[in-house]
Length: 473
Ligand code: BG6
Image 1 (tube, rainbow, N blue to C red):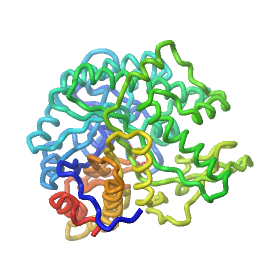
Image 2 (spheres, protein in one colour; image 1 turned 90 degrees about the vertical axis):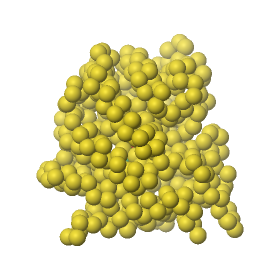
Image 3 (cartoon, rainbow, N blue to C red; image 1 turned 90 degrees about the horizontal axis):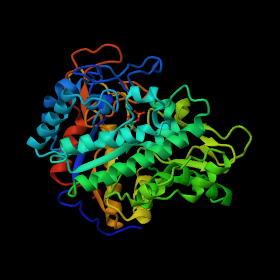
């Protein structure tokens, strides 16, 4: 639908920025922090750094928060490293870890920046992984206890909680993220059991949050992107519905309605990967209610009917870690109408609007975008500037689509692009930069880790001052 005028962004809109602990903090083994599955990864893709120092935010958070304030950020979405709080996942509490996040949150509050806290962003404690990770039902209890510690410690300072970042990507692309246990004998079956356990853990955390902190709000944070059929061919449309169910609705139907999506269930049954559901699980899942939906969006995907000829899998942008497509379910493919970024990810701002409309139509809950952004090889110019006009272009087009979605009647209360500051990509090193703020380091040369605001950060600052009024005109 076209409109003669677009509705303005709400006055108290959360213009933010986003990061995750292991990708930005560094200090991987300091002040009592235990190792996570990410720290214990056996190897990293060739030519890419590990996460030991990252952007050294752990030591430089004051300087970073000051820069966020200069940019005018209204919100900062970050994650807490479970292994700083409880180094082995379910044992002793580490006071120094607790203090770090108190200091970070206090610093944000000093500048009136709303902390939006992800409880778990890919970095499961290694000690829990050794005991079976999410395959072990005990991890559900460990997560509930961890949640209780977080709510007790930070509940008076944090109003917005996100449970688990991109649970769907951990299930679908765990090998790229470093979250997949390489020792699993029957990965797919195990993964859907893990998925069930994570869904129960999330439900328990949401219920606990409401019991302990009646004023606080909590929601899931999957990666949601509408799947297109490659053509109007009915079989392609069915394939897109299959993948939408497996990739997107499985996670949100459960978080919001407390039931398994029927197509996703039929898929798991057919593949013989149905999870074991313990007595009482469905009651736990049904009684938990999110207050909002947070989601991450980078790109859309296009699929067609499975050919079943062994060639259904498609490597997005040639990235073997991000393959999708499955015999008898759907075949992955390209969308000829979209351009691509330097890493082969399709750029689709209009798909972003469609995704917001679809989520809101299905669930009728307020939305916040907790990740969206452009990975690029930024260049530090001789004059010390970073001219990332391509990022401005990407963000502007996506923000405009939020405005269209708001005009469509979708309730959106915040936008936290990835990333507030440069950090380490999940599997493509630190040369794939996303930040508004440049961090002066290379893959293997830490240099001085100096912070430099990129051109996009000044552009975002102006946009925030105008509350997005200049967008879409
Ligand atoms: C999301 C994750 O999947 O995408 C982030 O939540 C990640 O952790 C981001 O960094 C961008 O992906 P990548 O692979 O380019 O780092």
